[in-house]
Image 1: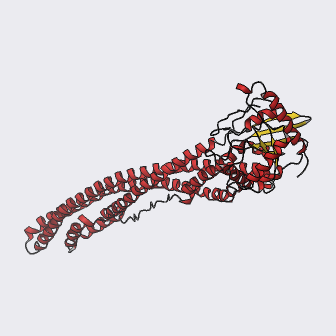
Image 2: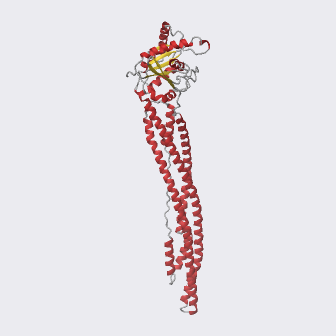
Length: 502
C-alpha cells in the first residue's frame, strides 16, 4: 500500500435501486448517471466519471446492482472487465450503498465479490453509505442507527459489521422534494467528500492488481478459441466436401468397372467359342494331314483346315487381348482418378487433424487461467468450456481409411507374349489345343483382369458403406462446430467495449 496524489478511484457497489447512481450524481455534481429507482433492473452498464474537490481528483465508478435475482456475481464482474485497466490501478475506497439494512443476498454477493477480486482486508477500505436517511445531520440519530445496523449486520457477516458507516439523504429532484432536494444533496456531498479526503491509502490486493491481466489473458484465449473454431469449421467442411466427391466418384467407378468387367467376360465367352472352333479345326486338320501320309489326298485339305483354325485362334486371341486391354485401361484410369481424389481427402484430414490439435494448447491455457480459477465470469467460462469440450474433449475423429488392396495381377504384355508362344507351338503337332480349350473356358470367369476388377469392386463397395457412415458422423460434428461458432460469435460481442460519454 502506498500514497497516491493522482486520481482516487471510488467504487460504488450495492443492490439495484438502493441509490448508487444517485450518489454518483451527487458526488460528481452531474446528471450523467441514470437515477433508476427500479429495484429489479437498476444500473445495467458500468460507468465512470472524474471530478475534482479541494485539489483532489476523484474517479467515481458506478457498477451494476448485485444481490438481487436478476444478476449473478459473474455478470457484475463481466461488467467490471470493461474498466479492468482502471480498477487494476487500485481503489481509494469502496462505497457499499444501501438505504436500510443489508439483506442476506447482498452480504453473500459481497463475499463472492471479495473472493473473486479482493481479499480479507477489503472492509478496511470499505465505507457503508446509508442513503434516504432524513436525520443524516443529527449525530445522535446516526449513532443510534449505527449501533442497530451493526447488531443486525453481524448476524450475516462479522466482517461487514466493522466498516465506517456514513449517513446521507439524496432525495429525487421531483415532486415534494423540489423545495429542499438540492440543499440536502449538497450537505450529503460535503459529508462524504470530507470522509473520502481522509482515505488516502490505495487498496491494491493481488487479485485486483492482476485483474486487468487476467481479463486480457482470458479474452485472448476466447479470441484464439474463436479463430481456431473457424479454421476447424473450414477444414471440416472441406473434409466433408472431398468425402462426398470420393463417394460419388467411387459409385460411378464401381458402376463403370462392373460394366467393363461384363464386357471382358462377354469377350472371353466369344473368344472361348471361336477358339474352340479354331482348335477343333487345328486338331482335325492335323489329323487329316497325318492321315495324308497313308492317304495322300487328305494331306492338303488337312493342312488348309489346320492353317485356317490356327489363323482363327490367333485372330480371336488378338481381338480379345486388344478389347480386354481397352477395358482394362479404363479401369486403370479410374484407379488413377480415385487416387487423386483420395489424396485430396487425405490432405484435408491431415489439415483438420492439425487444426483440432491446436485446441490442446488452448485447452491447457484455459484450464490454468487465473480467470477460470477465480470464476470471474461463469457464463463466459462455461461457453469456452463447452466449445473446448465439443472440439477437443470429444476429439472429432476425421481419419478415414482410403487404402484399397488393389494388387494388379493383369498384364497385357504377358497375355500377348503367351498368345504368341502358344500360336508358335500350335504349328507342330501337340496336345496344346486341348489345354487351350480348357484354359479358355476357365478364363471366361477367372481372367486376371476380371479378378482385378472384382477385387476393386468388392473393396470399394465395402469402403462406400463405411464412407457413408463417416459422412453422417462428420455432418453431426459439423452441426456441433456450427453451434460452437454461434456461441463464440455471441460471446465475442460481449468483449466489445462500447465507449460511454464522459
